[in-house]
Length: 233
Image 1 (cartoon, rainbow, N blue to C red):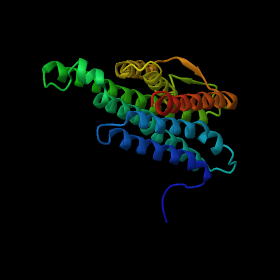
Image 2 (image 1 turned 90 degrees about the horizontal axis):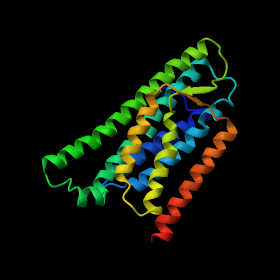
Image 3 (image 1 turned 180 degrees about the vertical axis):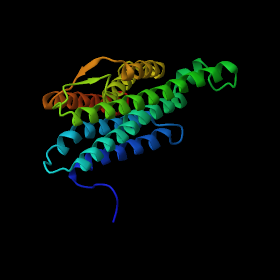
């Protein structure tokens, strides 16, 4: 007998975590494979887009199952949209021609060490902000459920799941412009981290909005494949 719940309402969340874990391992393997890792990030985003909607189709969920699903989703999100983008960034440091040739970050100098520390500090800060955002969401969501306020209409701060569209869009420019986007990636990561913990309202999208986001993600995915394996072959 195992602990946990394994019905169909949890499948997409489990798949998102498996995808994220695989993406982390792939990104950090060898000399780093950030562009492969980004595809796993997008798949995690796809799973997350529909896991809540699938869970709500089961009308006889117990309060314990609902809370389990909520916390499971947040734990999966910190891996998929917190750790995985950070690991992709770490892989970019190892593979970036600009950092290696122009800034000479591997020459052993104090300047090189300072650049390494600064870039990795941004990644750690990004993960920390994602964690804070998810913990705050869990607290406010439990308060909302206990007070019977009805369906949530907006979020406070940028939801971490937006990372599944933000970072692939940045990476797409690597192929469109053929420029090294490593530093751009880190600037975007820093801005995104601040947006996670900034108090502003973001409207919760419905099913139509979710489908639009998925279609945008699919278009980015297709363009990345085309540029990587056809145009820039």
